[in-house]
Image (cartoon, rainbow, N blue to C red; front, side, top):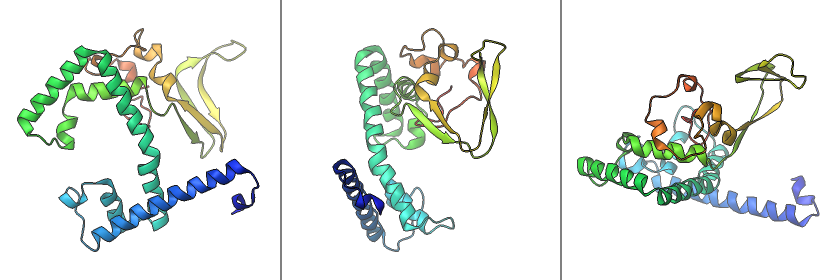
Length: 233
């Protein structure tokens, strides 16, 4: 690769770091593949409960990924998702420490769930806890680990604006933005999730109940994919 010929220390350090990460991901994948062997994997079975087992099961499906693509996914799960997940959890715990009343309410909801369903709560049971869901959404709304998304227009198009904007000459209003094919589009998650026009005057306040209240009509159907695809913008 051309990067091997660049006589610049930081570039070589980055190359070495990428090689290490790739080697670790390759080892993780191959170790799991050897562990599973030829045993068929069934979604929901005890053997396929972890992410790696699910990824390996894709190899035997009709829409199989090749080994290189799967290792790239392992990289994303083990490296890229590591900091974002830990950051989101740390921020949520920090917020709950600042709001004892929310912490108590959440603890009570989880305790009741354990009394009903037992010690181990599955995915559907966790999703059925409204206040836990509200706390997670509100934490990610205010402190998303990723502050923006980048997209590239695949064709010439026009993007409708939720809120009309005034052009520089201040004549009229813009309701759409025309974008040429190949244009890079940067979407601000932080800006969208703290917009006063969408969330109200308390947009910068941690208030989980906003996810439990009746949702304002201007939020319906306006969603942005990302860390938590259900966050409204």
